[in-house]
Length: 399
Image (spheres, rainbow, N blue to C red):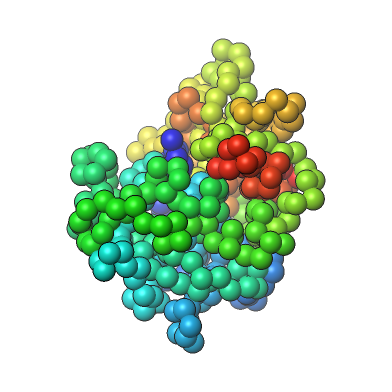
């Protein structure tokens, strides 16, 4: 199981239920074809560490994004692209076809034919050509294969795996996704299918041609993981209108903090007292691509209508303990959190909430709100987290 842009919970619900950053509960009749929001003043896309901010796209809540400097390789044709989701739940860089730079980037070829990709999320798939781009991360440039997500193309993806799989374009809610999950290559966790020629036969390109986590391509001092730090204090009852933070590259080699080794899918274990029946063990993960806590507790009232997918009741003093499902290590991390009704939160007009959540059976999705409780949370793929016997594994690191 993989967790992608919409997580396994209900991030799509909030994107459809808000007509703008003001928090209206009415649904927009015709979404804009692309995000028109820009980078907040004073933030640099070439800084180290990289600034992270709340999406300035209309209709989004709890969406951590960055601005990336993207160029056609070997040229001065470049674009500073704002509102690219920082996603702990996927691998590789994906850009909207609506961006001017998207049409300039050279397409990868295999067997003399253009290379396309179907990339699967929990909520559907992205489909489009694979191109090559030069991307600036940590003040350094790397050349990396990138997928262009183009929902206007007729896609064969649903017919390959499941006839009912829908397309899951991320515009107008993001301009792209920076997936920083391990393993390095997106085809190693069975989420990616590559095609030779548009809607043609399935192929297996070399790894150098596949979409991949660009952090691995940075110099060795910066390529062993990422750490997300949020500096803004968020009111539990009111939220905040925005936040500031940083994405640090290569900050995990010192081994500080609690390390929770994951399985090959980036999952750990959560112990949570579900529905008053005693503590239960669930598959779990920290996922910046999910905009709420999504977990199994049927005692908290759920929303209906436009806010369906979220809790509309309150639950204070909640406790969940995370541990590794694959390691004999006794390392554990306990998170104390609360849930406030989504209707109450959305009525504030704010867009950043540490207490937003919704129901999801049989798992614990610690979405972006988990990053707002004063803990720095990162992903690491150092040798201690990703042993040679199973190089696809990694660790969540909590400081």
